[in-house]
Image 1: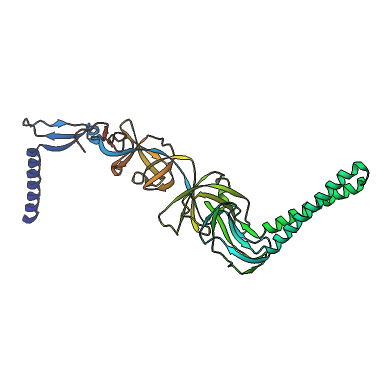
Image 2 (image 1 turned 135 degrees about the vertical axis):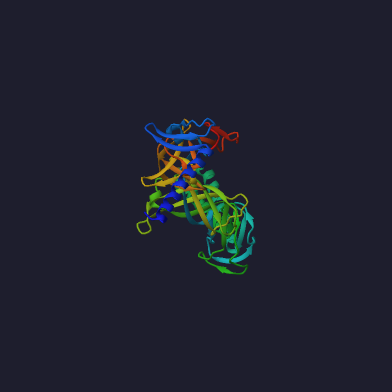
Length: 388
């Protein structure tokens, strides 16, 4: 062996001896024995102290933050676009042709049932009514004379019957003349709001001429289409919410008023009609609406999104049972507002680890701070051995 090689060997041995002495002076020097690892501590006596491996592996309880699972219904919102119309809305037509004599309403007026809206020229109808009234008077007088003369035999029973029939016919002609005269005056058929007049005094109108529109907007009907997959979910009287682009930011509540009996084979939808109360008259016929219907579903435990983990076998959460962490496999049902609805062996009120999940292992002791309890005070579950 050359001088250089011997020098290197001597240096290596010297460094090893110096390192061992330094470790001894610091108080710990590991040795191997049949009983497992030994921790040699420099306690001043120079005697090594044995320490078992199990105590070193278990460690103190791991601090985590947990929340209780909350049972939450898996509601679904059906959205649709609909068109509104007044609960009662008509176009007004004259019952007879004639010349407009007077228009007694303005656009947007609130009118009552029976209020006069328009009058047609009725001079001929008044004459016909007066003539019919004279004929009734004459027929009644003739019948009275015949009935007085019949006991003396001056008038036969058949003549009395004919006079009675003539009186009945005269009265019918009078009633007909009165109806013809009434037809010259157009009345509001129900309470509502009139539209813009479509005729002016002096116009010659026919039975097919539109006079105006009349709408009762105490409530508005909104017609819309819903997918056939929701046919069993939509019920009469079910609550709905609507918004209209004409009044941004405002919401109106109503109920399902009618449901179609058929599914359209082309669009695969069925018709639904909602009734929306409109006491202030802000909604109008013809407006477009966004419609929302809440469909109630089954309830599932809900937990924060960050508590759900993904592994090789699927999704899971950590549940705290008796101060220990238990891995629970679950299935994600729905994500909503930062929380996840779970399907699995998780119950309402179970403590689910939210923060500190990265270092958890099955059976690991945990010290949990419970977030969101009724009193809003953080509680501790388990014990700690001075931190981790």
